Length: 369
Image (cartoon, rainbow, N blue to C red; front, side, top):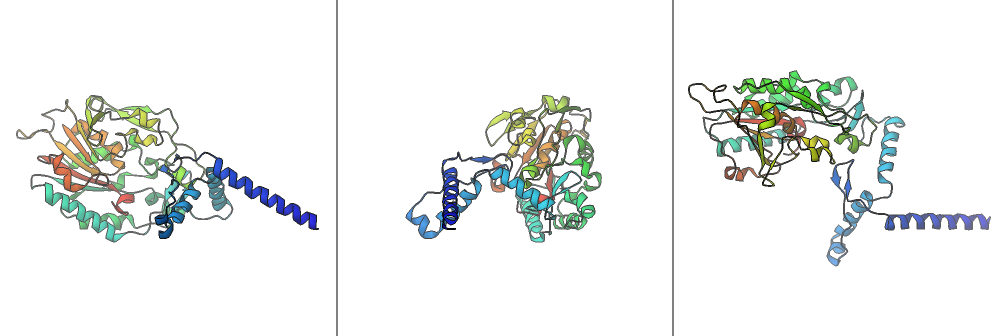
C-alpha cells in the first residue's frame, strides 16, 4: 500500500515537472493567426509591478495565451461545448447551417446616439449646405439567422429607424432589403464583394451617379478561413474569396496617407497573409484617396457641374464596397475614424463639392466606434 502511494507521488511529481519544463522551454508564439491578435508578452518583474498587482495580472494573461498546445485545447473545448453540452454559443459565436455568426445583442442605444453625435460633429466642422450627406447601415449576419436558429437578436428594423432618427442631417439609404445570408462569408463577418454590386448600384443612384457594372470576377486560389473561424475554434468549411476588376478599377490610383505610399486596389501580399479579407484596399487603414483619371466629365455633369467626388466614413465593410464606386467618381476618399482623429481631418481632406456617405455595420455602431 505504501509502495503504491509512493509511486503515485513520484508519478505526480514527474508529471508536474514535465509540465513545468514544457511551459518554460517550449517556444512562445507572438501572434495567434486563428484569433487574429497578438498574444500577451511576459511582464517585467519589478517592485512597482508586484506592489500594484499588475505583475500577477499580466502574468496570468501571458500564461493563458502561451499555454502549451493551446490551439488544440481551444478546439477540444469548443467541440465539447457545442456537441456534448449543446451550448447555444461559444464566446457569443454560434454555428448554424454552415454559417458562423455572432449574437449581437442587446441594442446599445447610448452608443448609437454617441455615433450619431460624432457624425454630426464632423458635419458641423467640415461641411456646408453644398455637401449632400447620406447614411446607410449594414446589418450583420445575425439579422438573417437569429429567428430560424432561435438565437438572441436585436430588432434590426428598430436599429435602422433609431439611427435614422438620430441623424436627421443625413439622407438615409436603406440597403438591408437587398441583403440575404448568402451575401456573407460563412466563416467571416463581412459581406462578399461579388454579391453586393446591387448595393453599390442603389447607393450610387441615390447619390446621383452612374456606375460601370462591367466587372470581371477573379477567384483567390487560397482558401479563406474568416475571423469567426479562429475566434470560435468551431469547425467549418472554408470560404471562396472573389474580387472584381474593371476598366476604372484597373486604371485608378490609390494613395495610403497613413503609410505615405501608393497602393493597389487589391493587395495580393495581404491576400497571402494572416487575413485574406485585407486584399481589399490593404485592410484597416485610416485614410485613403482613390483617383480615377478616366472618369467622364460629362456622365455626371449637369449645367457644367464638376465631376463628382465622394468621401466615405466607413468600417471594414467599406473596403470591399468602395472599389465598386470608382467608375462613378473622379475621386473617392475613405476615412476610418477608429484610426484617425476627426479633429485633424481638415489637414488631409478637402470636403468642397463632395458627397458624404456614412457607411457602417451594426457590429461597429452597436459597439464603440
